[in-house]
Amino acid sequence: MLTCVPVETTLHLCRDCPFTRQVLQSHVAISQVCLNPAVLQLELLDWLSICVNELSSLLLGELVYLLWGIWKERNNRVWNDKNGTVMDIIISSMARLRDFRSVKLKSSPNVVRQSSPIKWKVSAAGIFKVNVDGSFLHSINVGSIGFVKRDSLGSFLAGGGKAFSGILSAEHVEILACKQAIEFVLANNLTPAVIETDAQLVYLQLINKQDGNFSVLGRLYEDVGLLLRGYRPIQMAHAKRSANTAAHLMAAHSTPLTTDLLFYCTSLPSDCSCS
Image (cartoon, rainbow, N blue to C red; front, side, top):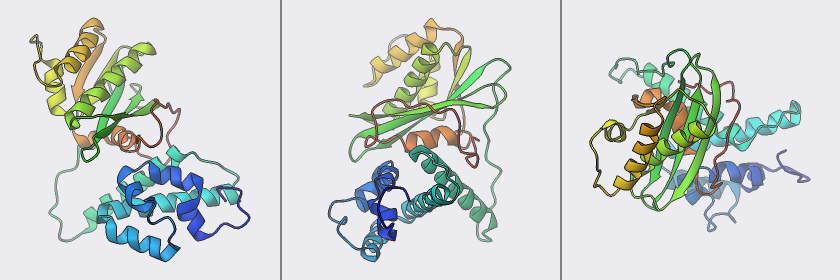
């Protein structure tokens, strides 16, 4: 049982438990439907019916896997005396869903086979690599960033995320992700380092040596450029989205509904691929 209730009901486990709500609140689109005050008084089947009818098939899949992760967490606490965190549930659940979709895509006879996706690669010996990504919800102008830091052997060292309000665009949150990662590297003396982003536009503007950026985000680009030029052991790199999965997961679940502060991890769940 995730809370100290006398009897754990299915409805309490799936919706009303404070731990469950923290997990669901990490996903803005899901929480807006499934934790809407108008549906919180419904019984289980009626509540699930609303979720099924209002969520897209992709979001419904994420909801199902998050609930499955919560159920696994409940069983681990009851039978194995092991407690996971909200972030453990989120990352492991989304990793399982990603693996399921990947296998389903490969096994479908109607899918045109494509070349294998580009995967994450280690940095050169003695150099840290920090992958960054941003997530943007244009309907409410909020965004979140995520980063994952690894050493030259590919070992996970740290990860974090932060939520922002007043975001103008996807480009805006992507450049903020780069800025946060660089500041994290400098604050913790983690150089030499490579900051890797899948946002090609941001990458190209940051490596552009010409002075003056007169776009709406020009001042922010200039600030990040000053950081890069002031600390030569930090370089920018571009990667395909398929090589940036772990940072994407961090960004997607660093929602404004949870915290405004960076969090740091020391490990990822064993079933979460960092590719």
